[in-house]
Length: 374
Image (cartoon, rainbow, N blue to C red; front, side, top):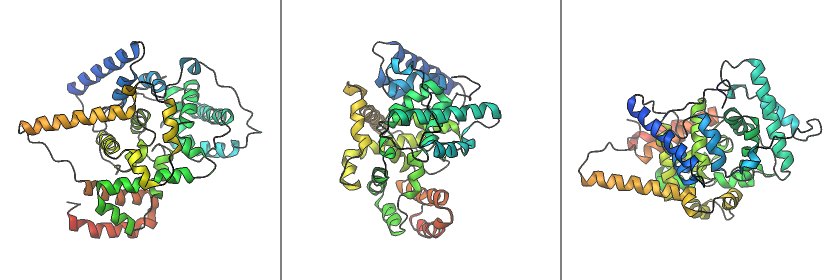
């Protein structure tokens, strides 16, 4: 990835510095290089690297790994995208308006000429994908995902990967109606109910619904996160996992907490309460993204993202059991109640503004009874 486009390096969100992280970073880069060099490519190892602390570390590595995670063939990556006649395109005017409003998604200080060139490329990518796939319907927020791929990969690679993503992970959002999108949002409350029934009941009584998470879900959090390092870290995680993982992440995300911790918790939730179990409570019909995911998933069961997450959870549980056996004192994790009330209070404050004020006040009155805000 060209360094002039943006600084591609990333590090764990908790800010740990020093020799320890440098050593682990170098070892991780070596592991990724090894996984890419074998034939066939070790996609299971790449999934583990994308999920584990720090993600894929740099944009240069993402250019090599993201296509593997999406199983995009090399010959597709080599194709130069065609040009689309903008004037006769039914989506052009809306896409243009959205792209013109996307200034904050580009690196601060980028020269106007360079940014404008990237905005033109962003329009081209969206229109090409829609032209190739007339069954897909543009939605506001789609450009927030596409711009992330453009800034990391460049126009050619971004076009190939966005097309694959649009026909699989994002497929539900690109229907003529929002029915399937609402269906995915319906997973959120059952997940919260499994983790903390009291918080679930509070949110139900407050009638907050799930609309606060809509922009998170349909932009993969790209629209609401100000730090691009956090955005690409989440994309590493989401690309390595099941298409419904963003809704699990939505269930654990308050603001200003370590993203590595949130990613770990989201992975644990997915293993504890998989989509097949939650679907019965979310709605009676299956998510299209969930069903088409089987189509592009790799043949080896060892490469399935849910298998990677299960192995990771088992390893964590084994480590905890060893620690307990050795009487090692560990720091207690924040309670589920504390995490999810902060989700209700902080998330609603950001997403709903003044309309959420009464709910926030209710939460602050209710929370001290459970010692949630020490």
